Length: 326
Image (cartoon, rainbow, N blue to C red; front, side, top):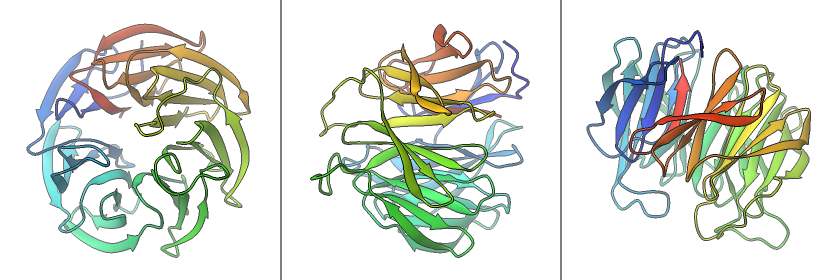
């Protein structure tokens, strides 16, 4: 395939490494060992020059006995660590997004705090308390007017980036579900035009579509043939929208399944079996394919978007959580 990308970066959480792949052949070109535990997530600067990777700690949410408090800064041209930013008392950094103004926004799940960081000065400029429990993923609209923050044990929180305040909460739980396991959501995806945000709840694993103009839910659609899984275990769904805005892919970590969904008709879904522990999704810049990282299997699955099927697998290190073309 020809992607017209400079590279592919992958965050190997299990191996605690940052891996770089040739974007066309998907053969590994080089790797960086993280200096401390443990790499989890990824944000790329709007200019494509820098990647940010949090050092979360040696565990997972709910069992992170030695939480870390740092963010690695990676020079994408050099494929090398350029800096490490310490976050002080703010523990377990996870979801991140980088802004056009050169700032990094980071959600720390143990601190339940949203940080605004100036990476050049290694300075935390502001700290905002996130309403809810278990802040995990964040996603900003393309115009950077709003940011959405998922809570593993609570409502989806909406942050006004201009006013720098949380302005709304959208419950993820169904009737009769109280705070705790199964009450929140995790993965998020924002449509490129900024009109909708998509997420999946941890209770019955339904797809939610949110109108960003009103911050109200406008659709809730079951994922077809979704496997029933234990609500006390991770029900992580990850989501990504294609560059043209027409296709949404959802993965279900607990089931080994992925869905290819039309954003204009959320009920039009193609179920694809991938491999154990699917997580991160990366759409190729040419729009023809998407990659799914199978965290528990050490492989990357390629999806042919026109045929709506998996057509190849590639080595994926020890266990990649998230990956992105740049």
